[in-house]
Length: 66
Image (cartoon, rainbow, N blue to C red; front, side, top):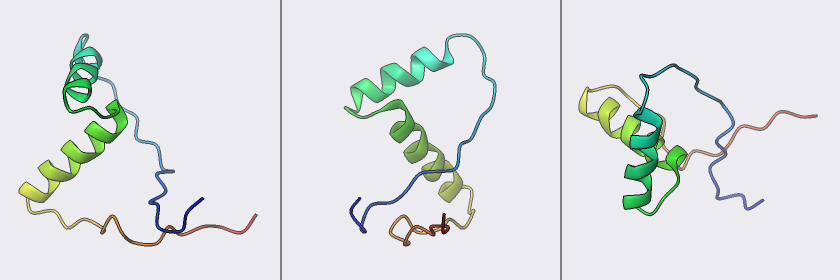
């Protein structure tokens, strides 16, 4: 794995109303990206708009020794 890639390793799980996952998939297709990437980008945009401090995406991934 390239050292300049961001490692997305922490899952976020929550329940939504019926149809929302299909809407996210449609939005992701329109943006030519994955549902996960669309949700990450959208969530970061909303948090930033709310004034929440976010970690930089270019921060090196912290890896734990096996």
